[in-house]
Image 1 (cartoon, rainbow, N blue to C red):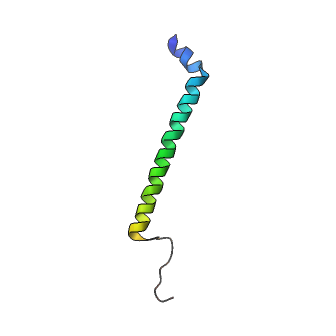
Image 2: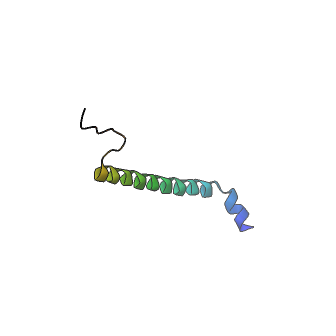
Length: 53
């Protein structure tokens, strides 16, 4: 009975959305940080570094 009341509560869904959004944002920021660290270590592999040109 109590669980049904919680599921219907709008505040529960708003809080759940905020927690999920914050976790996704943190994961995204960690991924960006890893990408930057990789670029600093190995350089940007997307660009062609041709010493002859």
